[in-house]
Image (cartoon, rainbow, N blue to C red):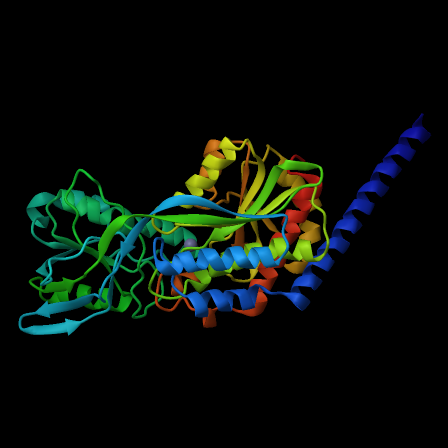
Length: 461
Ligand SMILES: [Zn+2]
């Protein structure tokens, strides 16, 4: 009896060691394929330089859709298809102008309209400025202090956060909700300090959300240098005014698409593991890190497995979501179709934090205790590649709706070294030249590794 038990334990241990070493060999092959034959960097180059900025509803966004579909088809996936969705169509118009007005002196500063903002009057808008640091302060000041003025939200990134993404989250309410809130107290315009810790002259755009019940007032991002300058001048002379002129427009919703490439599962064709990013980008640059690296990296993860003649048990998909930046209509559409088509999504990986050196993955929706076991079993496999930080909490804007509609889906966020992300995020500096080939490739290989491990072993430890 005892002998039998020992034998069984020995067999189980051998089987698990065998599985482990088969997995570790496979991961090595994945990395070899990517580091020798990787194509994501050249794909990113095409997307950035031959297509460029691709805000939802634009002609470039449509070009990006067509190029993505062709590219996926060239990889010989089992299925490549588009998912139609209507998207907001906001245009910036002629470049904005901004001046600090000090008596008769006009000092030009770098501004950019926030995405979805309305235009100023044609001749521009001049008003006194009131600096605030939070929505709570705005409320305390109330209408008496704010009416007729431009509200200047100037709360900087909190440098104490180790992950800049958390500082972004903590400062982001100024941009997202600031203009709608300020309008409630009679403000005529809003300036927001750019959401970055970098001290530079790039205005960082990004979407703002109006309240349909309140008048919409124009809103712009100020570069951090300009924000410091304006703040210093207001301290010296509180009568300092600001002039800005912006020409943006909200056009009728436009038709667009998510782009999906699939390797169909051999055992469970109706169970899906997906990896994706967003194809749209802000209009100020090439959307290289945000989120060109995401889409090209996600596609590469599936391409690697296809190139290795891997036959997945479950269906694997690369998904290029449309409209993450100013509406999330693509994410909503994907989730809606998953339910309508009765697709079971085991897991969804999103990469939307820049194409930087991979560190690991964050997970939302695992069974209790699963992450602990995963850290015992998978962490050693990922450790040689420095992509072994497997932590609680993770997901993304595009895949969020999937878990709302299909609550059994595990959401996974690709985690890279994020220290430099907010230097370029939503700025004219988000260009191909700021992406490193090796970092992008290592990220794609890390995602391919995770796709493989989930496909082989599932997520129910
Ligand atoms: Zn993004």
